[in-house]
Image 1 (tube, rainbow, N blue to C red):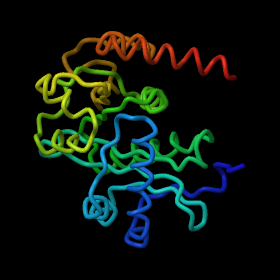
Image 2 (cartoon, rainbow, N blue to C red):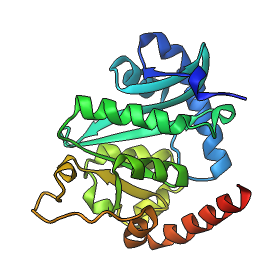
Image 3 (cartoon, rainbow, N blue to C red):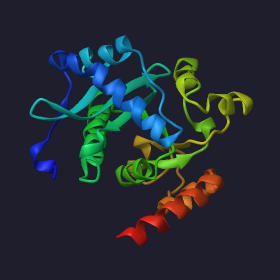
Length: 222
């Protein structure tokens, strides 16, 4: 069985460019399994993230285990941690959490004043984001940079995003605002900490039912 202690999670560098095709193939496989969610990126796009020092890669010696990258939008006012993927044989050991934590730290270091956000349909990713301080929000609170939303074109649900004029989709949008560290929302209003299901139910009621079903299923298998 794979163990987290045997895996190195680090900022990707040029020496890791050889893994780009493997990363994209792993993304494709996950998208087919889920039937939703993950958009494939070009080889050049992922390679640029790596050479710019804006990606996290996980390896067990020379074997690929996981990946995530960061991107800035709206003159660096918003930063997304995207493309989180873990190879099937490395799932269930906490690796996704470690990758997201490293990506979060890298984002805060490179863009300390930016709001961090992401779109996801996965319960596991929502839980990880919630533990890092993210909260579900409406799509209107995310960047309006067309370049970001154009990146969703590779997703099988892109037509939904278009039909709703980018106001909703099957994904849940989650946001982390550095201003929350002071205990308010930037307007002097105190923030009340809510559970993950409570916050999702406020902004994406449909996903609440889906997540509640998954949560109950997970409880039964433990």
